[in-house]
Image (cartoon, rainbow over all chains, first blue to last red; front, side):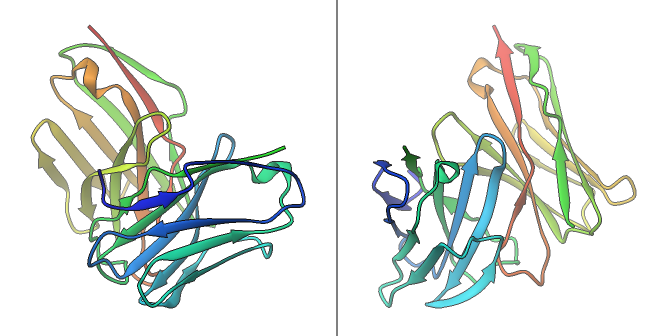
Length: 115
Length: 113
């Protein structure tokens, strides 16, 4: 158990809908990261928040947004869902702002299926 | 653009042998490389980190090397066991991109008894 908690574990929704994925980082970790993993794209970095502020951004679609709250949990919002958004979404956390080599701990992921 | 590549073909080896996985990067110089293990349907688990100024790191049966001339990292599992069967991911990072990691596609390792 990495200590990173993600909910829901599985989600099935229709095209055009909106979903919210939730992440609680490890106790004491200030950074939260979101990654998307699909069969054809592998593990892709979406976005990082550090202590409530956006720290780094990947190729996150405009239909997707995220935030980190004062209690450090984070939410990833996916809207106008398309079939191609079906993937495993991982949240990860680390103690610092990243780039130092400190270990990043991954949650077990949220499986999103868009039908 | 920054790119990291791993052997896409699965690696099948016999128990007790050494597994060697390859990670190549192009168009940039990572500050460090990390290796992760991922089991089906689970999150990646950190194994080892090696920095750009290090040639080799070891942890128990694991060894990783970093060759900045070849732009390559090798990951070795000695005395492999069936329990080592999993997908192994290589990831790179630079110092000016926060905690962003660029992952390779992963190499699936199967250790047969």
